[in-house]
Amino acid sequence: MKISEGDLATLVAETWAPSVGLEVSIVDPPDDDEVPFVGFVELTGAWNGKVAVEASEDFLRDLAVIMFGVPSDEVSDEDRLDALGELSNVMAGNVKLFAGGDCEMSLPTKGRKAPHDPSLPELGFSVGGHLARLRVVSDT
Picture 1 (cartoon, helix red, strand yellow):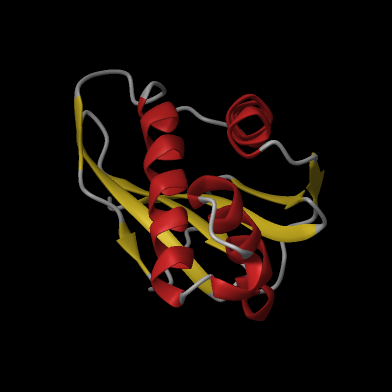
Picture 2 (cartoon, helix red, strand yellow):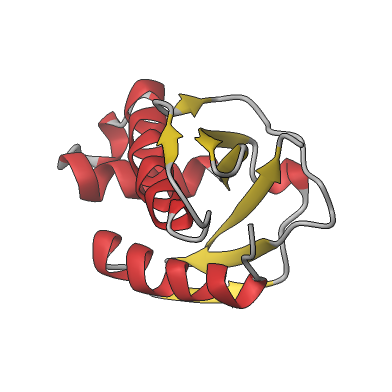
């Protein structure tokens, strides 16, 4: 699959900003401890791998407030993970367009870190002042 950091930046700008209504800026990829939550979707077919979105607890709280209308002080862990799963699914659907053929998408898996191949792109970004990272991970 041919996808670059620039492609990821475009996907983030065109997908996340309208979806969540928060300012998005590209930053250096955060350290693992800054983004302890992960949601990923597996792609199989023309390309086999995962699209992973890693995020902070604060980002996921704010995202759940926006997506589900839950008051900030009532956001549960389940709300955070559901929001992460929804956004992971949207990003995987967009990345799938770069696969060069038919790909099946799994349901989102939430809560586990995905392995990362440094030869594939990753992108750090900030949404509403909270750090997040988008990674593409190959299974081959």
